[in-house]
Length: 316
Image 1: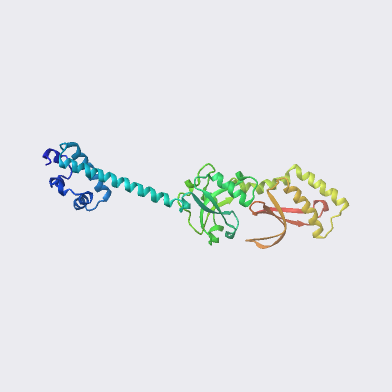
Image 2 (image 1 turned 90 degrees about the vertical axis):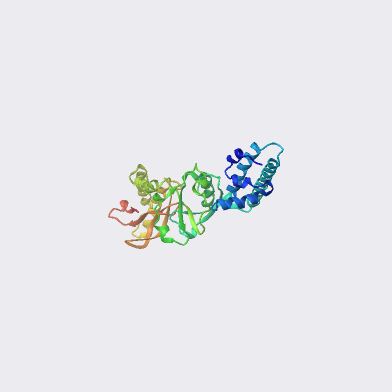
């Protein structure tokens, strides 16, 4: 028999007042516990039983049938817990090889100002860094230096051209190269979406300065040499009134000017442009090499002085 002193230490003494032959097993305890606590869980029931058994084993007389029964019930509980833990580990190990997204994710990337059909996937480990992602992107789009890339986290449906055209990167989260992928993408990325926008400048402010830097060369000492070369050539190859002929001189001037910034710009003859003021072909378009963004247009015009003829540039 269990003394009243021992019963007073138990939270559920009514259960233990019964004969030890009725204590049965953990399932019988669960039935009793759920009646007392209808809004509970099996885990809480077993935790409560474990606590009760510890008190009984500690206080009951050694060799008594009640104590032996309590020890046997506790041993069964331990075996059940061990089996449950093993089943959980086995299930987890069996799942790991099939759940590839646990260790890698696929991000769809798009260069700024490209259309949605130009998006491309990058599969990368979740524990890799954004710097690693930049290196992987560099191989895809063939830029010379990964550090020149800036990455922005976005969520654009792959068929929403309007959302893409109206996106403002300054409002988006810029990805830091030292951070891990899973910091920015803790969950599996949404399917059928663009996840990363790539810009080739360090920031939108830096990109805005690139056309200004090119414009600056027209006031730079390099221009003096270019004009001198133009005058020298015109002595042996007269600039005719034909616009095509004048364009030959202008193209040489533009190529020399853009080469001051190697790899930054391209000169594209007969460039088609469109905007709020109209559309059509211009003599030359100046575009960023990495993004194909139009940053300037050049129209060849005839002026009064043959040596002062050739080009006017408009920054966009």
